[in-house]
Amino acid sequence: MILPKMILKNAFRRKVRTGLTILAMGIAILAFGLLRTVLSAWYAGVDASSATRLVTRNSVSLIFPLPLSYLDKIRHTSGVKQVSYGNWFGGIYISEKNFFANFAVEPKSYLELYPEFVLPEAQKADFLRDRRGFVAGKKLAERFGWHTGDIVTLKGTIYPGDWDFVLRGIYTGRTQTADETQFFFHWDYLNETLKKRYPSMADQVGFYMIGVTDPHVSADVALEVDAMFANSRAETLTETEKAFVLGFISMTEAIVMVIKIVSLVIIVIIMAVVANTMAMTTRERTGEYAVLKTLGYSGLQIGTLIAGEALVITLSGCLLGIAMTYPAARFFTTSLGAYFPVFFVEPFTVVLDLGAALLVGLVAAVIPIRQAVVIRIADGLRRIG
Image (tube, rainbow, N blue to C red; front, side, top):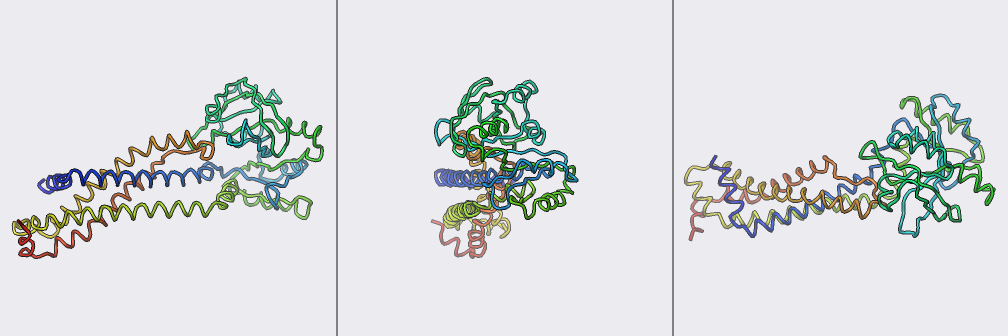
């Protein structure tokens, strides 16, 4: 019981120094936690992807369309349970800063393929009946203050002109990783308008979403679908939804790597700060440690005293940082929700914070422990007074 009391008293003996070190540790943990949360948000689409969904697109690039005539052939492929299709619409709401994902999809099959999008039955029925209807995620509707029945106009970029839609439903995510910032409407509405305005762009889709009967047949289905359209005018590339999302993330791999490096640099910097604090503390208490040796304290006990003090400081700072991370994450969700639809602090991030604090505390105490343990009693006693 004596050592724990001594550790606590020593840790807070220099209140200003300890307070500043804890604050620095808290800010470092806050920055580390937010960066790790950004990485989690970056890969949220991968975590949300289903093993039973495949994506078929043009083998050259996603920007090149596929004929609608491929639908029946894909539907009759062995192992295929459900097929939907759609186009990236790329519309702008009021101004370019109001960015969000908006798609033209075949509504019934699309909703069946995405059971994680929970839509009330009455709203679903209204959406399916209204050719101009659209469905928006809860976060997107809250962002712009939309309510069911509102008329929303998007300015087309890929498909020029002003497009009017009626909000018929607001979906919520079944899980935390479900994206609640999407906007999707009837593909038929887009296609019928294109037939009148731009006939050459009609009857074409940007992607097919394929639901398979079993995840184990995904590879076989992908190979069979691509083989059907080999050597055609629009060859296909079929991959799992996870691989499809990872393809987008790989385009930003440099940014992801920078975030990882910066998060590690933060830990190294705070490690130096805590090590400096412990070194100053050890120099000040050299005489005290010599006295403890004369009283029979072993090197292990003195080392425990110093390591315990370092851990009390780092863990206090860690708890402060974790407490600040949650409101900071909520602020980021409000400010950057368009770019990070799924942004929340995962339990694993908290575990990493605690692990980083333990690592910093232990490593920062290594040199001070060595100095305190190896010093001779006579040399230590000379520094008293």
